[in-house]
Image 1 (cartoon, rainbow, N blue to C red):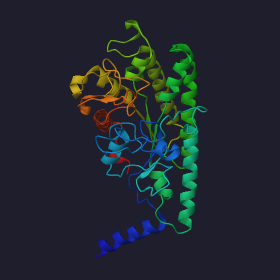
Image 2 (cartoon, helix red, strand yellow; image 1 turned 90 degrees about the vertical axis):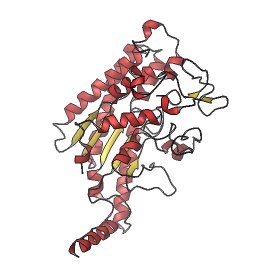
Image 3 (cartoon, rainbow, N blue to C red; image 1 turned 180 degrees about the horizontal axis):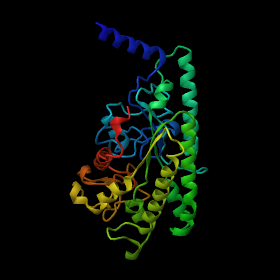
Image 4 (cartoon, rainbow, N blue to C red; image 1 turned 120 degrees about the horizontal axis):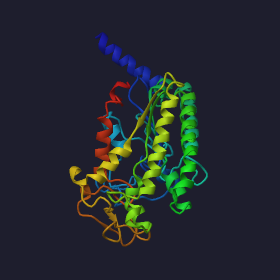
Length: 351
């Protein structure tokens, strides 16, 4: 009887004082890699079928045929999928909140929802949640919930690509900008820490030079590509950014002593998909499943996935890349599984 009474007491406490009880919760910042509907809710951009065809069987605002890496992490923690912060109709923040928006960049001014803006949205969200709790509204994250949440940042690929396009795929001008990308990510972590965040996962960027879109858009010689057919300059810059990101995490740990800051190396995992596709059941790693143009990349900027004239592969699970840029659910599942198997992360020990 005492156990039953204690359970109901805790449940009643959570209803009165918000969502916490040290349950798993994720607060996410990012771009299309982890956008669960932010660009749909914020800009009204329709992202319908064939996007979502594999798992949700409808468009959800995700760029892909199904679930994202973030979705698989939520499933592992037995959480619901994260609602976008900007979703105005029936959002559910019991599992956390997602500030990611497709096209998101670390630096302004190219899009409104850059990393700094997403952090400001979080600050408003937290302040408003605590204000509503103080007024007696119970279904919001409380101070303990915000403190115990896992804060994830997955951003940077669009900054690198934007700089690459502006420099006509020249390494040096982009490399000179990377310290600014890292510095603003560091500032975001420090600001989140100031507002109570203590558990961080900072994701590296992936091998962008392996994407069908990049290979299709830019004429290249064999010497421009590495041994597995990926653009060298893209991947060299991605690795330079990742090196700076990892070093930044190392520098922050002794400063933010009561925080857990984990650098999550997804570059290595994703690159291996392209280097050893048959190991994972993939074929034609540099060919988009959904697009136009056929071999070798099935990508045409005038007929991208979902636009008139597009075609779709017969077996989506055999493709790494869905639409020329974003990964398929099959690839995301493998990447998420590899992330969750890393002993360094110890995700299940966070709560």
